Length: 147
Image (cartoon, rainbow, N blue to C red; front, side, top):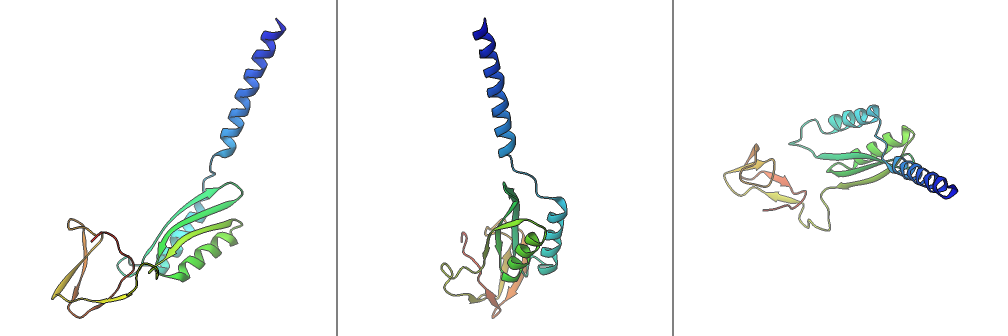
């Protein structure tokens, strides 16, 4: 009889521990105010996505740490985002790549060699046309993806 009570208490204790572990390991959401400030900062630095890149994802880690990953072509944006997070009382885990990556891209500049060059949003034939460039227009090569 005593053994059955002990078995029931142990099951209840085990369930409580599992619940405690599961709730403690869950990511806490990034505060909406901080997300909004980062979005505002990005829109100030990159008002037109045809002229600049700043694609970042924001998440949180245990220990009051905000993780930021993505890519940008402006090193100043990377520093401003890190500074904004740290001024908000969080630690910043920065994984933002600054383009162009000199280990991958050897020649950072190209020259349009056709009469009119279509500039697409994604590297695919079916992708949306964002702009065009005329022959002789210099273009900055940021990364290589697809064809």
